[in-house]
Length: 124
Image (cartoon, rainbow, N blue to C red; front, side):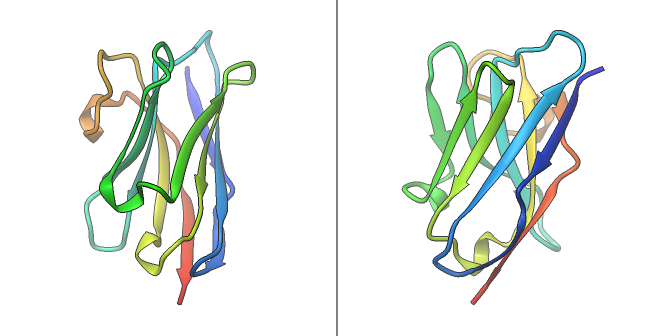
């Protein structure tokens, strides 16, 4: 069974930075696409960023472009989301997810594996 475990969430002031980590473990697993989603209270889970291993291509939702960076440590099956210049509207539970589908999926239904989530709270 594949497990994804996030860490690194917490409370940060607006304008500050956080780095989220996601470690994949379980059966031999090297996901083709790794992504981060987030869910704010009362809202649906939304796509934030994704990385495709083979091409190195990354995509971001417009609201985080230039502020967030997704990356991975291939040797350790660990994935990161560097969050810089955070804003109060970035407050949410952040989830990492993995997929072996073609392209770079951006909807929740296209990801088979999910972490439990980590809370990020940005104070103004």
